[in-house]
Amino acid sequence: MNAWFGRKDEFPAEKPSVLLLVRDGLDESLARHVGPGCEEEGVPLCWDYQDGRAEELSSSASNRSRLEVGIGLDAEGSSISLLKIPGVSYIRRKGTAPAELRWIGQVAARLSKGEPLPVGDNTGGGIRYE
View 1 (spheres, one colour):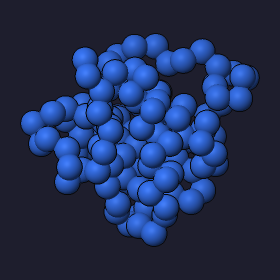
View 2 (cartoon, rainbow, N blue to C red):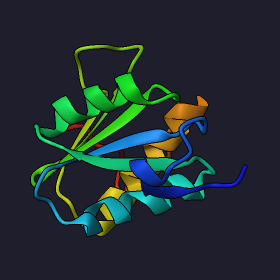
View 3 (spheres, helix red, strand yellow):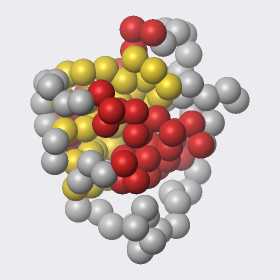
């Protein structure tokens, strides 16, 4: 599968992808750190801006994603939501360090494929849910 990462308006509408919604006003570079995590797993990621908190953004993204997995990103951290589990963030993480965001992309991609989550997290410890 050829992976792809880019803005939603550049992305072919018929191509399934994980959707990342970035809070309005945040730097585009934050979105660009999530993309490689998805690409490593061979899953396309498209992104766009929207206003809201990470949890709200990920929920909205999962509703709009053809793969039913959405990521939300705000200045405090990130969130992954699954359409099949409405009303709650499946994973919430604090921080916007590049390694953290790449890990979030990888986890979202694996969830979209129904594969096990990576063992450990980006810091070398166990998976932590905050």
